[in-house]
Image (tube, rainbow, N blue to C red; front, side, top):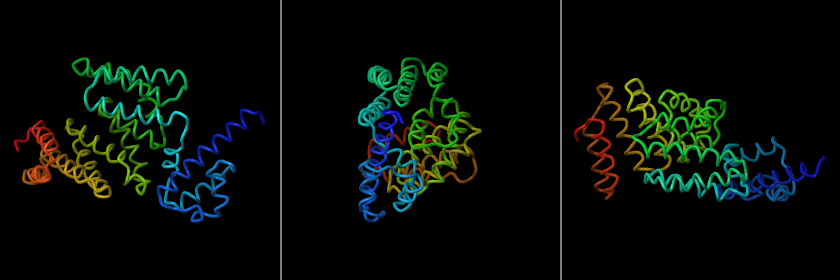
Amino acid sequence: MMDNEIHSKKDLSINIGSALRELRKLRGFKQGDLGNRKIISEYESGRKSIRFDELLLILDKMNATIEELIYYIDDENFSVRERLSLEMATCLDRNNIKGLERIVKQATYYYNTTKSKFFYDHIAMAKANISLLSTTNDYMKARKELEPIKIYLLNLKIFFFNDLILLSQCLYIFDIDTSINLVEKAMETVKNHHEFYKDKKVGLSLVMNTAIYALDFDDYLHFSLDYSAYAKKLTISQNDMMGSLFAEIVSQIASFKLGDGTFSKEKLRNSLNICKILDWHSNYDTMKEFIQKHGIDI
């Protein structure tokens, strides 16, 4: 066996062990709870390689999934990726073109250094959003920037945690048919691993973004109803009152547009009034504007 192969296996054992230790601590387990304390310690330190079947047994004891473990596997660029993701979210929230241009430069540097797909995707996402913000919403140009990401996601058979994040971030730029197709496939992951994703914002973000996006297309309004209903279930498990209120609003708007007889203006008013009672004034203004945008006089 070549030296670089030895180092590669050793590095993988260390990364898996580090992720396993992080998961164990987050779940509140001691090493002895998962098996022989000495062996678990050797796994976590990377001194001993772990077989896949042994790994699955340990994850099962913690009620954790492979997807969750993969998310916590660290490498030398982990902190950089976390910071870049945060900057991307902030720039998109504030329509900050200069900030997005800075992200393109940063991500390009790290991609040239590491060849990591993560940085390649962030270059494409930043450029696509720059196209939208610097033109009159030229979606055709923006979609060209995201074509490699679109092809990658369409070819996936299983969506892992980071794939769900990527899809959630690109959802509004893809055409509605592509978005619905991808979300339908991705939701199999979320539902098959409900115990994991019920506590994760990425699952809620994905279903809420889909429900909101579908409101603009008459042929897809039933998706708004389905996904807003599922979003309400996720907000309950996450104790997210604001998310629950917004999911209810999206559901009511979909019912209003469908004319299915379940629309209730009173429920909309109640959701807005709760925001006032809790002094969530900015959320109140945002939700009221969102309701009026869809043709409902509240």
